[in-house]
Length: 87
Image (tube, rainbow, N blue to C red):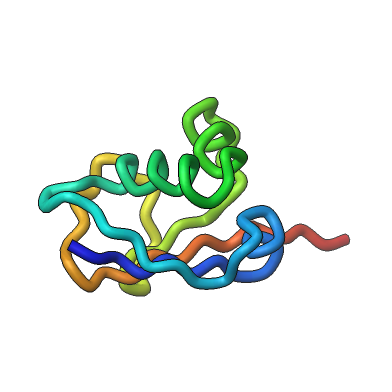
């Protein structure tokens, strides 16, 4: 299956890309996608996520999620956004 991943704001600077299509096996979960992104896009993404340093807010098809076991489907759009703080 194919999932489109979009990195917005500073997330694109961390990833080094804005949009990438990722091929995954059927039944893959969000954590599987993050692992693949760590291997193919930027190790920072997976290292920070799996060590509990959540530097991204994640959306799947426009719905926010923090569930690494969320099952993905062909055609899903996953968006990574870095939370910004002001003052």
